[in-house]
Length: 453
Image 1 (tube, rainbow, N blue to C red):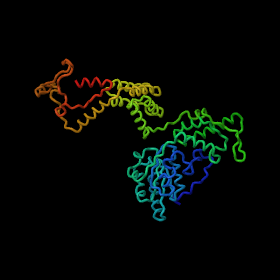
Image 2: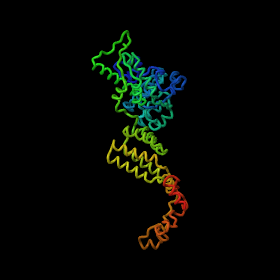
Image 3: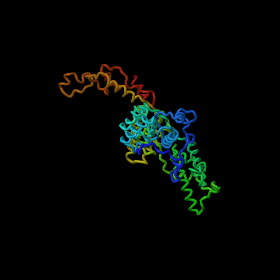
Image 4: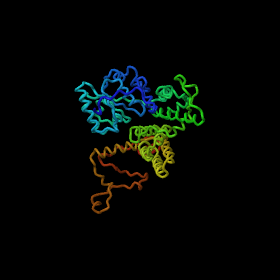
């Protein structure tokens, strides 16, 4: 028998020893919480699943939002041959074997293969390219699941042949609904244990889970174990079921218990993935919009998730020149000082230096005139004729150079009453051109007046 023969249908009963998150995995589309925009009645994806006319698709969303669950539900509902493997474990040899068998299944039995690839972003270009011929021929319907932006992680050729569906992070209400279902379900969940959970405990679980149902259920299972251990330590018996129903005695889960179990919440953050760029973009744009509250919030999100503090400091230094510039020249000094402070005292003590700099930059007057001046000058320097430096601006350290009129006509600015000589410093083709145009904000207002005189 081939390793890739049609698998046996998944059993409807998950072993009682399996983790709670696995036992409570939805078995029908209507049980999948929080994705109504994709799977509500009449929605295109739901209709395609129910009518077994799926085309290749990519499921993109944060962990714990239902990507793998949805693939398993599709396997239950489809008449296609279903194969699943993980990009972490499969290599090019396995992919080619699957592709060959998919071709045979279509040619000999007229049956398509539905191939689910978990963490498809971990496949390299060669591995992803191996899918293309069979996708194009219609031998396989590819379902890829990824937590990373497919625009960056999936080959453009494969992406163009697939529909991307975005699964949203679960809201707090969705997480609470999932937890209540687990507490009440006597067959698969914790309903036979006589557990109750205070509303603020469920709310705390939802906050700690950060939109991840798996994390929430794992924490709930830990809390159930802690409640049972607490009862045991007091010498009380576990509540007994009577005629298949739990007794009225119960073990209670409260918010304090949840706080003890989830002291070190893992924030949703990948220092090399899209969320890294999303958060630094949020910080930069909040400072640009002069919003210190948002700036310090996004800064804290990055620091608490473990971002390299010197990376943040470098971005603050860049912001000081790009978005504040000469409207407040002190901003650059503040940003560089924050970088030096972080380098000197390290973390976590350096977090306040970064926060001070971010708040200073957010509240400083803004100007991108330095940034745009450089862009204009760089464009002129790289695309236009490189004119020679005017003779009067050249040094003349030798007799020959003086004889060639190097430095002739140069006027020493300090000798002028206003400190500015009547002398053109741009080459002839650029005379009169304005690269730097100061704003009327902050210190630049004075620079503008001086420049216009």
